[in-house]
Image 1 (spheres, rainbow, N blue to C red):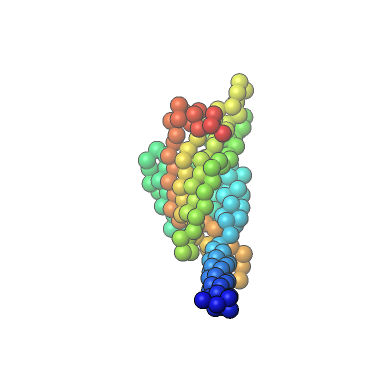
Image 2: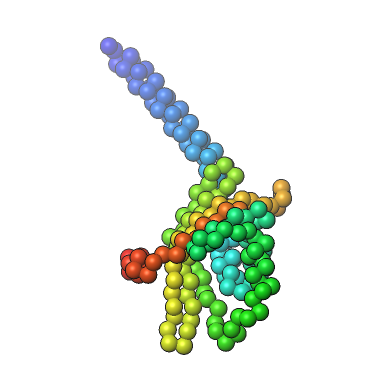
Length: 176
């Protein structure tokens, strides 16, 4: 084999490698461009958690009309029942501070047009002595309800809440 023959073979390998890299980069760019941004789902969750304690507007905006909600008590209901709860909640103790909600370990994945959301909900209720903290595993399926041309508007169509037993919740908190 001559030096020019080795050079030609090497050049062909470089060309093949370059084409392969270009294909890989363009494919990953295409899938990244087609993948919805998690920031819209995160913003919807944050907005909801900030108003979840006592703001019916936050609930109305977050829950989609065809919602199926399975509570931590094992009850299944929809958006209408959640919204009706605000109308019936005239007996709330106004002296007691409402709980403060936050999310830990948030994971968002997309399947086609749906966002799959999992997180640990932390519900902190201030009391005179000390705060009571409860944790729940939450899983939800959200859809973008925005009209074409509008910013994304993510709403939950399916939700599951599971109360984490206290010993497990304490262990989870210590690990963080």
